[in-house]
Amino acid sequence: MFTTVEDVKQLLAQGKSLILAGDESLLRALPRGPWIGGTIPYFMTSDGGRTSREHIFVCEVPAIACGARAAVYDQASIPRIFVDSPDPGYTILILPAFSRLHECFALDCPLYEQQFFKSVAGWVAGTHLDDVGRMKPKVFAGATGDTLEDKGVAMHVALPSTHQARIGIVNIFEPSDGEEIQFPESGFQASECIVAGQRENVVDYMSRRGLDLRLPLVSDMFGTKVNVSIQSLDLTGRVVKFFAPVFKGVGYRPAKPVSAYSERFLAAIPASAEPPVFSCNCVLNYLHGSLEGRRTGALQGPMTFGEIAYQLLNQTLVQINIEQRK
Image 1 (cartoon, helix red, strand yellow):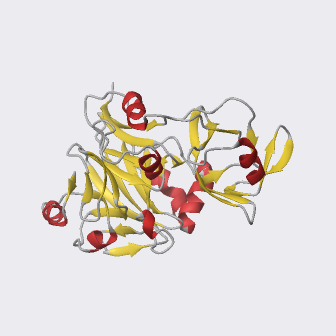
Image 2 (cartoon, one colour):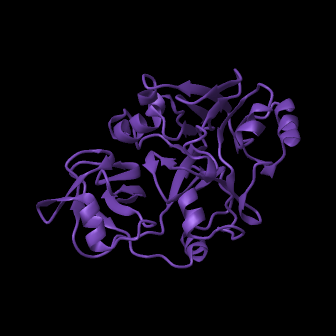
C-alpha cells in the first residue's frame, strides 16, 4: 500500500503491525506502535516506479499470522537473526546502508547459525541519491520511537503450522562467457583480482575489459546466481568499491547486457495465486532500467540500497509468499 502519514496513523490506531518505507521526515511523524521502518524515497507502485518524499509504503503483517514481534539488532546480536526467526514464519530485516552493521551482516552472515533454514528477507535503507554522503540512511523502531543509524530492525512474523513462507529471488542477470575473476580478500572494495591465475589491479582489469559499470559481477553461490554491484572506480587510489562484498575464492564474471528491464522482470516473476506479503527491488534496477513509471507486474514495495534474502544481494527483486503446506 502506497499511502499517506494520516492513513498509516489510522492503521496503527487499529493495532496493525506494519513494515514501513519512506522519507525520514514522514517516519519521524508517526506515533509509537507495532511497526518498523527504513528510509527510502523510491518505490514500485501500482502505477509503476515512482520517487516520492510525500508517501509511505506500507507492508502489513497478514491476517493469517499468529503473531508479530519487532526487535532491534546490533553487531553483537545480529548473528542470532536466523535463530530468532519463527518456524513456521518469516522475518523482515531492515539495515541502514553504509553502517558497520550493514558491512558485518554482508560479510559474516554465511557463518550465521541456521542460515538458509529460516525465511529471513528484507532490505537496506537508503536516501535520495542526491543526498548520498550528506544524509545517513536510518531505520526506525516504532515501539520505542528510536531512530537508528547503526542498528537494524526486524519484524518476526509467526505463521500457523498449516502454512509456510517461501522466499523468491528474481535475478535477470546472467554471467558472461569467458574468463573468471577472483579476489584475494573478502570485502566491499578491492585493489587486486586474480584472472587466469595471474594477479592484476582490478581497475586495470575493468578498464581492459571495457566493463559497463552499471552491470554487476555475477557468482554462483550454492547454486544461486548472486550479484555484486559496482559502486565506483577510484582511478587515483586504483580501488574498486562495491555495494555488496566480494568473497575470497569465489569466482565472478561480468553480467551480460540487459535490455528491456521491465519486460525481463515481468517474464521472470513466477505466477502466484496470491500476492506476496513482501517484495522489494534494487534502486540500481530502477535507475539503469529506467523503471520510473514502468511496472514490474503486480509487485509493489521499496526500491532499495540492497536486498536481503538469506544474505545481502544486489540488483535483484526479492519477495515472500505464504503457501499452504502440502
